[in-house]
Amino acid sequence: KMIISTHLNVSNISPAKLLANIQMEIPHAFQSQNLVTDNVAVVEGEVAVISCRVKNNDDSVIQLLNPNRQTIYFRDVRPLKDARFQLVNFSDNELRVSLSNVTLSDEGRYVCQLYTDPPQEAYADITVLIPPGNPIIESREGQVIEGNETEMTCTAMGSKPAATIRWMKGDKELQGKSKVEEMYDTMFTVTSQLTFTVTKEDDGVPVVCIVDHPAVKDVQAQTYLVVHYKPEVKIVVEFPDGLPREGQNMELSCQAKGKPHPQQINWVKVDDDLPSHALITGPDLYIENLNKTYNGTYRCFAANSVGESYDDYILYVYDTTPSTEPAAHDSRAGEGAPRAVDHAVIGGVVAVVVFAMLCLLIILGRYFARHKGTYFTHEAKGADDAADADTAIINAEGGHNNSDEKKEYYI
Image (cartoon, one colour):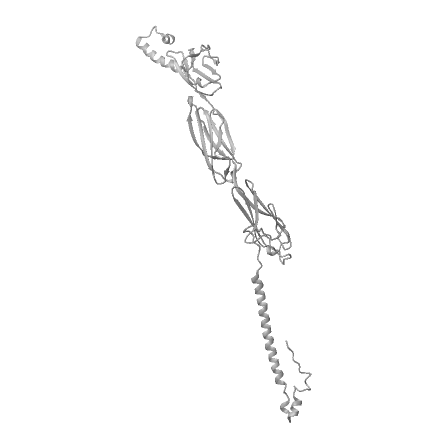
């Protein structure tokens, strides 16, 4: 009757037309009063705001009810004796109420109600978020040996809803396995397990457990990896600066690092004994007055509780004043071995010289052999024309008178 009397003049309308107008006017009135509200998510202990809004209100009364359908506010009056509810705004088109210090018991469906005929209702669900406690990282072992697996767990307790956990190792994200356990009052505890193989490069790298939850941001915990690894060894030549030469002194330093720090460093000469006057002082090897008998491979061993490693240095002692200066080289194990003297070239030169001398001797021998035969042939020259034997002897070139001219030379 209120709708008809407000909107229609019924004095001159037939009953059939009146009924048709009523069917048209009733839906129009309901559509014009559009009641809306929004769901609210709030962190425990903070403030929730509920807004009941009406479009095109015709002065109908707005009220707010709690999940138990008790009236919190009727227009701008608060019948409920709970001072945590406060009026934020009241007008023809909105009733806005705040709820401070929200607890888990405040969670539920709140009702915005508009007093029309029939009343309109809209629902605002309040969800209370409970952040997890500070995450806790636990490691299966405090120290890990290089190449072994390590296992870590991260726990986020007492959250609503359940949190999610991510892992970072340095700047790389790793994938863990999570388990969700439901507690009382729809609270959850999440545990994530991470397993990976460590290397020596992981020593000192942070491993971070990151907890994601709608109630909090940037909640994380971290730990640092402690990785034990066997020594890394390198031999460094302290002096001489250039190539080692006869008569010089040499010092080799064995530089070793590892975790734990190497406690034992030893020097040996591969397949031979160290020179008798070589001096070892800590990680350094000192050799005086180098000579070529010291040539060989010198090896430095370093050891810790994880294992043992070594590095080699190949020593080649050069002449004091070489005819040509060989290029500088690093005599570390297998790298830049000294250039050997080319004995094949020297042998070839010697062979050519010997062959030339033999040829010269043969030619000279043949030459002198030929001239000696001529001497004996001419020795009796003139004897054929002598009248008698005495004259022949006197006239012969090989006689006493020519003895000064006859000379023999031996080479």
